[in-house]
Amino acid sequence: MYHTAFGVYGILFQGNCLAVIKKKAGPYQNRYDLPGGSMEAGELLEDTLCREFKEETGMTVTSYHQLGTINFLYPWRYKETTMNNHICVFYQIEETAGAPISHVPQFDGQDSLGCVFLPLEQFHAANASPLVLKACEYGRKKQFIEKGQRITEWSVLSKPHVHESL
Image 1 (spheres, rainbow, N blue to C red):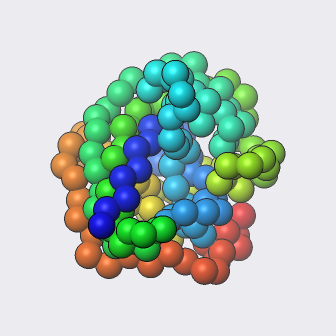
Image 2: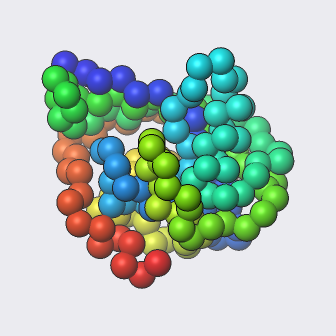
Image 3: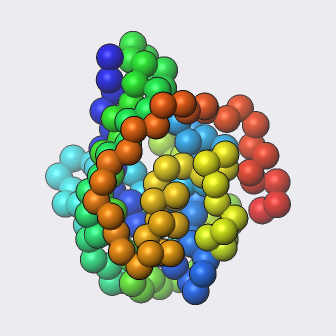
């Protein structure tokens, strides 16, 4: 059985570095992930983008454009399901106000431990979500390829080793 998750995510580059969050929950826990997440009742996609980006990074989005929508299918045990279908709407963040916060305020539902900019070459399948790897591909190729991905093996990390250097 499949669990379906739908989220809106922002890609923000500073030179060759990508803004990522330190994820503390869900299938991407203890990995780097893109800022973003699920819609709340009555929100437009853009509302979700701006709210989630602010909550998870401390930065206010002031300019953006939509890149496209893709999904990732991978094994993940959640409640009564064994597979996850993560549908993602990606936005290029062009401008922000404020500075990234390395330790964001915690509240019920907050799954970010904070934001950091890291070089694209630092991300790989063992320390990053598939969303981050998609953003890296976009950063290198300068083209967003709208093609979903089937991932045959996925592990939820139990140790926060990716956060040690932050």
